[in-house]
Amino acid sequence: MRDLTIDKIETFAVALPTLRSFGVSGGSVAVAGSPSIRVLVKVSADGVHGWGEATPIPAWTYETTESIVTTIDRYLAPAVLGRPCWDLDGLTTAFDRAINRGFTIGSPLAKAAVDMALHDLLGRALGVPVSTLWGRRRRDRITLGWMVSGQTANEVADCVAEGRELGYDAFKVKIGLHGEREDLAVVRAVREAAPKAPLWVDANQGFTVDAALRLSRELDALGVTAFEQPLPANDIAGLRRLRADSPVPVALDESLRHPTDLATFVKLDAVDVAIAKVQRSGGLTLSLRLCQLAEDCGVRLMGSGLTDSDLGLAASLHLFAAFGIDTPVDLNGRQFVDSVYASGVEVKGGVADVPTGPGLGVEVDEAVVRELAVDPLA
Image (cartoon, rainbow, N blue to C red; front, top):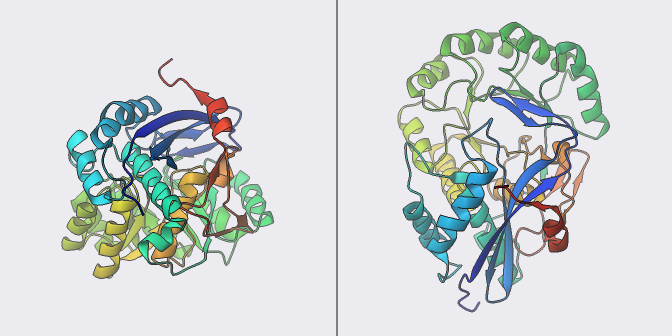
């Protein structure tokens, strides 16, 4: 491969159709009838192009559409223009010099979009999928979970039935939205509607340690397999206590922005399960490091996403396949947004094929991207 150098980075804030409403403990993520904004990034090098995605969710983290676009345009892009696109390690260092870390990784969603696009570009330059670049692909298909979020206990049966009609047989439930009693009622209703299905819950930092301990005992009785991010991300003491006493394995998501975060939790014996999430960890480069560390330390891996459209979905599928994640994963973008700009990712019956096309394996219709683009600063 010739020594491709980055010569242009473009950002597009696109308004995608929203299929269903979706909320987390921090607030609304998607509202049916209103567009869902995704920031797409196009990186060009000597006539070759790659695409990446950032998913702004202020209810989940601090990065907004406006901040992602300006961070890339004014800081990350100038820091890497003219550099060789194959030097992913050096580019990651350049990102950190442009937007440094605070308590943990700085601007991970913005960095993830550019890093994702670089992986796509490298694969396209060589004519191979990202998994070939890495030399690792342990699975060809990934099982997806159906999201239950915001419903009351009386509404859950219809939501579960809808997922099962589409071929999904694993369910993730967002809790921390209603109060302990109603949360448990929702989880119980899911279990009644799907008695044998894999079932896990995600609190998105919504509880205190005492509340989480009370809930974990009830969740265990319902056959819940993982309790995801029950406490605030930086409550290491609380998570260590919970992990010691909870009958349900504690899975960490928001706590694990950077691989060094996972190292800290491993040293303190405060993690059962590590959630792999591309955008949260600043892209595929750092996500590979985090997943490898988890595997080397004997920490179980689960997979999740950020209601990504198809670019983010494809990136996650390559990552999860590389580490052979065989439990259902939360890649729920297809449930909530319509990726009208993209093709190449096949999802049938709640199972996604890992793309085999060059790069991420997603074909982007740039004309549609430009048609859907909005001014985030207007």
